Structure formats: structure tokens, C-alpha cells
Length: 331
Image 1 (spheres, rainbow, N blue to C red):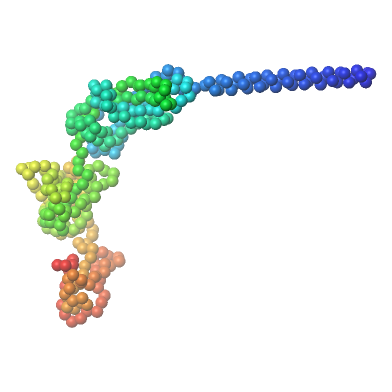
Image 2 (cartoon, rainbow, N blue to C red; image 1 turned 120 degrees about the vertical axis):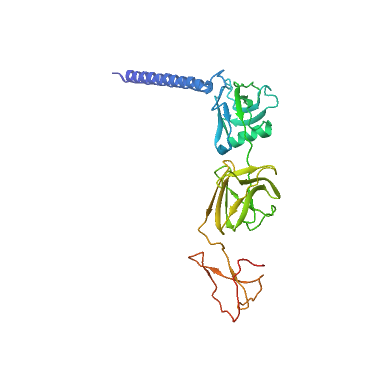
């Protein structure tokens, strides 16, 4: 082949390959651009999708023994932002039935939240405090969800209305005190010892202390003898006493001991048991034979045995004379 012919043929093949490569790259670029446009137009929320809300239970009688449990749960669908790519904010509304949500209680829940729950305690408080519902009577409510799209320029949606029928209860006292001549503070209602509320069981209170022969009962407020909880039908039950004309049957202690008391003012029950503990956690020694003499305001302290709380020691030099072992100072 002539050299010039070989050169022309080679150049022609190179040009063909270059043109093919350019056309291929252009085709790939065109497909990529088309795919990107489709992705940009995609919206995760369906156009005109209805905003719908459901409820776990629409009719209930609230019970304080379940105060920490979930009483009611609302769930709703995402609704639509109408392909605006704007975020959706959800607002929960609840109000008395028949008021058409005028001055309804609103709870701005923010974005990407599709459920709302109330505990028995919070729902009961809402009824009594915000709506002044009557204890023990059915109270009718209505609830719904509405949306705010972006800054509110685009009109949001409003869900279906959920009717509710709920019966509230009267909460029991959150404090309880013990008074009586069987206790260290006597019948002075301003000095009564407090019981400790149980952190997990509603209405349950605990108490541990030394009680001596005598009587006792419980009050709910320092300085006030009513309302009170006295002995009920038997020593295992308490009676809620609200007026002076009602029976005032007191609990009775017959032997001194450290007692553990559990009182549930919802179930109106009480348990009283002797604890395996000594009557006193501290003792003193006083008298002419002791270093501090008969000074009852500053007697010498006895030490509790490290292995037996019923045993007290005093390992000091005693002089000739008398002594006593008091259970307290100043008397």
C-alpha cells in the first residue's frame, strides 16, 4: 500500500472512533439529566392524601389506680404538603363537644410526629382543671388534628373529628400524716409525722417508727384534723372521714414495738406489722457514776453493737454512784 493511502485510512478510522465516543458520552449525559429531573420532581407525600386521625379508646371511666398508665392514644396519617417540599407541622386540638373548637386547647406537636398519648393522671387533670368536668359524670369532648404547611402560606388540612366520652375521678391526697398518743408527736396535728408516698403504686404510703400503747389515725394536712382516715370496718381497712359527725374509730396499739405501716387511700386498706428492729436506735447513760453526772441535756452516749442492733455498749470507767439509761435527752 502506498504510504499516503495508509495515512489517510488510519486518520479516517481515528476520526470515526472519536465521533462514536462523543455521541456515546452525549447519550449518557442526556440519560443522566433526565433521571435527575425525575428525582427532583418526586414528592414523598401523596397529593391530596387525606389527614385522618384514630383513637385507641373513645369511651372510658378513669381510675386513679391506673394514674401512671397510658389512658388514650391518638394516631394520624402524614397528610399532604401538596408537592411544595415544605415541612408539615401538626397541631392537636381538644375541646368540649358542641363548641366547634372555639377557644380549644391546642398542642403544637411540631414536625414528623404522628402519635400523642395521655396518661390517666394527665387526662383526668385536663378534664378537672381545664374543662371543669364533674367527678363521676360522663364528659363529652371532641379532638382533631390540623396541619401548618411551611410558613402557613399554603393552606393546611384538618382531620376528621374524634368524639370522646370520659368520666373523671376525684384525686386522693398526695400527702398523709400520722397522729395519736401512740406516736412520738401525740395528738398535735401541727407536729404529725409524714408517711412516704410509694413512687410506683398510686395512693400507697409507707411508715416505719416506734409506736407505744395508745391510739392513732391519719390526716392529710398538717394543722387540720379533717379530712382524716380512721379505722374502717375492721383493722385491715381505713375509712375516709370528711365531717365531724362521721364515726371517729381510731386504730389501737397494745404493745410497744417498731411498726411498719402501709396505707392505700385508694383501695382503703392498711397493713400493720411489727418490724424486727429494736424499740430505740440510740441510748444514753446518765448519773453520779458517769463522767457527765446527772446532766440529762448532755448524757454520755452508748454505742450500738456493730452486729446486733438490740445491744448497746458503754465501755468507760464508772465512779461510785448510781446511773440510769434514758431513751432520750432533755427529759
